[in-house]
Image: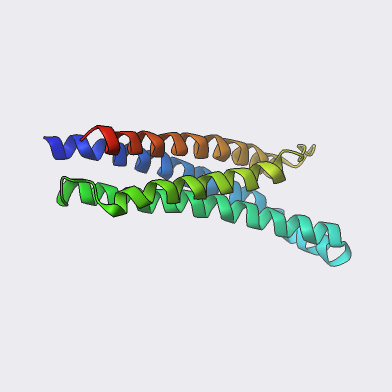
Length: 157
């Protein structure tokens, strides 16, 4: 029974990361609908080229941080179910690694999207902006889940 209880934090992180990954995928698909137009504009404008590049990198950084959290939660889940009952160095290293990754992706995402306004009659682009906002909120939730995991590792065993 204690193995099942120790798997709960990993399951929670896994669930949030899975949901955030889905939202990230939807945002990327929504924004990609306008990529061809953006690429044509980028051929004629350095500003448009820079915006296209920043959009791609911002989405990629969020997706990478979320993927890291998901994969880390799988490692934790497997360790809690089949590994040692004492916390390992891996578990202690995953906490700061994920917190730093999520914080960096959050700041990167926030800095780019905070100045972006919705564009009338461009539903997919606006949906991408909304999903990016939701992804930032989910990255905060993931960070809180990682902090909770750390507290449980330090004081719960």
